[in-house]
Every structure is written in C-alpha cells, then in structure tokens.
Image (tube, rainbow, N blue to C red; front, side):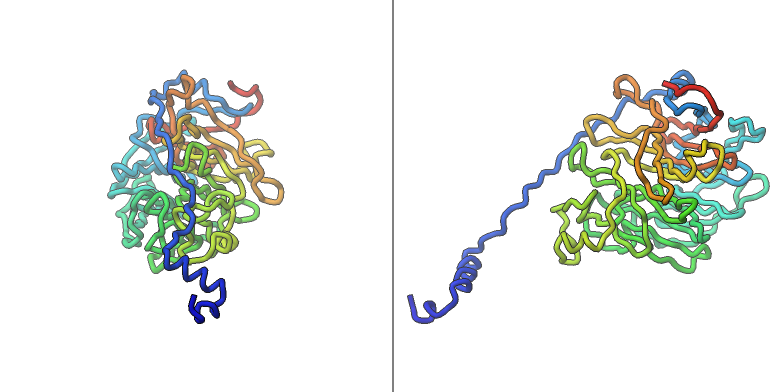
Length: 401
C-alpha cells in the first residue's frame, strides 16, 4: 500500500471503494396486488327497497325512478332537484309538484359534454365539466337559461374526471379536482386539489393539495370547518389504502401520493420535494378517521335541518358507492359520521344497508349523489339503477331488518 493510501482516513477509503464497486442501496420490499369483483346487478324492485335496513323511525322510498344514471344533485328552496348525468352530459329537472314525496316531473334542461358537478346559489346553477365551469339562470318554470362558460382551462382529467362543486359558508364556490392517476407526481399543481373559484370567472386559487380524489365535501354547520372524504390508492390489496375523512384546512397538504392513510410511506412515490418521508409527513395533515378500503365515498352532506332526531344534529352522511377492486365487496351503503359537541368526527356507523344481497353476490343500488332537501329529508341518487331515494324520519317504530 502506498504512503498516500496509508495517510487517507479509513472512512474515506471505505466510501470510495463502495462507490467504485457501484453497490446499490438495499431494495424496498413492495408488491402491487388486488382483486376485481363486481356483484351482479339487479333491478331496484319495490320488494327489495322495502327490505333495506334503516334506523328506527326512518323510511327510505323511491323519490324518482327511470332516470338515466343520476349522478350529482342540487336542490332549490322550493324542492326542485337538478340532476347530472356525466356520460350524456345532461342536467335533468326532477320535481315533486304536489309535495307527496314522489316526483312527477323529469325534464332535461341542459346538455354539454361531461357535465357532472352542480351547485346552486340564488337563482343560478353552477355546473362543472372536465375542463369547464358553466353558470345558468334558473327560470321560474324550472328550465335553465343558456349556459355561460366561466372557466375553460381546468386541468386535464386522466383517471379522475368527476369535478364536483359546492358553495361554502363564505359564499365562495369550491371545486374538487382529482388526480390524473392512481399514484404519481402531478405536473399540474391544480390536480389532486380543492380549488376556490370566483363566480364571475375572474380567477381561482388552490385551497388544499395532496387530495387524490375528494368528491364529497361539506362544512360543519356549527364550526364552519370543512371536511371531505378522500379516495385511497388502488392495487395495494383488499384492505389498503383505506378511505380518509379529512378536515380540509386552507393551504394544507394531505400527503398523496407519498404518505397514505395514517402516515404510511408509499415507496413508489418518494416526496417530490426531495425530503425524507418523515419530514414530508410532518408538514402534511393526517386523516381524522379511516374507512374500509375501496368503498368509494362520493356524496357527503351535514345534517343542517331539524327533521331528524336531535342526536343526528350536525352529523354527516356519506354515500359509499361500492368497491370494484377487492375480493369481498365494501360500500354499497349510506353511512353516518357521528360528530361530537366540539365539532370533531368520532366514528362511522351504518345508516342504510341492504343494497348487497345474495351473500354479497348481487346488488341493486350504488349510492352516489346526496343532498338535503328543504324539508330536512335526504335525497340520494343511485347512478347504477336510475333511482333517487328519499330518506325521511317519520318517528317511532322498530329498526327495519
């Protein structure tokens, strides 16, 4: 050994030798996995609807049927319901003219490609497509005036094309923009976000990021804090990644795609910033509650009315559309999220179940859009069977099922 090598520090010599040998870092054990299973589709017959399990004192009835894939819902103070169909790009007026709990009028009032999210403010209906947001005047007869384009440059769709809209207690319009992929580093900073829009089309800003696909979101009636259900990453097995209930805070990040669920590291997407997983996780928000993986939460609304019993006041309801990539199906139900007196979520519990039948081999409903009607009942769409249900409290009785 030369005199120069004898004088070099041992650590430097070791590092240099390893680099020269091009020793790779240790591998991270990881395997993508999953199942595909969709129950057989059955019609939503009156007998099947009557067999649905609901809490004591509640009823679920067909408000409207024969619709073509009713997706998102928005309701006027007079009870008129506007329903989107994302495939045909239509908006349909659904009206219960005699207020008997069943609609008699179903009339198409607008059509543009990919219409999906709907939100009402005064006599204006705001509608989101993939890259566009429109506004239309609601006419006295329920028809819509011409659709005026407010935005035309929203991010490209990719995997999650279903933009949803909602007005906050601040009077601002909020738009959910999902990710283009299952898990990836997005190039467009508006993907996987919640965005605040100006209703005159003059501009927008990102409110929160790192949200893979938060279709359902709403504000707590008392605290005015915003909560949303985010969809977990697919192909991580039947039980991973669980769906997330987040409190969405201005300027906050929610970890996707590097941090999933309750702080787990997703090795396929290291933090884009170059930070360690631990440092990145510390800067992001953790979910407050987790729900069974692949249940696909879509609609989320808080109970702001007084028709339901007092113990339901300020609780939230979430439609679980139902899984497709797990061996045993999850979702296919309406769930309640119980919030405590401080305005924080404590637990999920089943509210309406029974859409899965034949030992979970068949289904006759995939809950989708959800809105609270002026009388305090819930209107819930099923985009698989073309039905809108009315969930009401009538008092007394024993729990069905």
